Image (tube, rainbow, N blue to C red):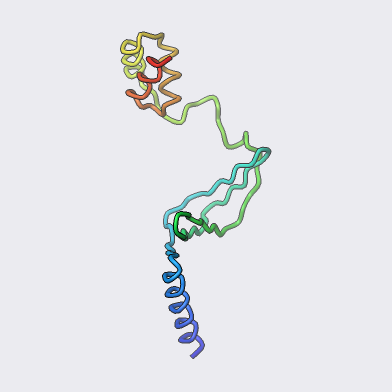
Amino acid sequence: MAYRRAKLKKRNLKRQMQKMGMQTENIDGVIEVIIRKEDEEIVISQPQVQLTAMGEQDVYSVIGKGETRSPTSSQDTTEPDVEIKEADIQLVSQQAGVSAEDAKTALIDTGGDLARAILLLKSQ
């Protein structure tokens, strides 16, 4: 009987939220949520995340165990996040009329997007 009452309350709550223009949905497949502060990061691994849309705003609810770490421990500045091919560097260098080093830097800055890298270099 208690289960049935709880199910009815949940259904009524959903109806009331819809009347107020609120919609909720679970976001599946989330691996990690990072909250970056000036002096530290809070990392929540394998969280449960729910999105509540309220008019023009979205509210994300995150449930999980957070771990605090320094901001530098999550960023590896020696290796780019994307693989930059030598052929891409040469193409960008030729098209934009810049050195290979400048072309590589632009490709890293644009996440490997050739067109954006060329436009970035030509606009400088």
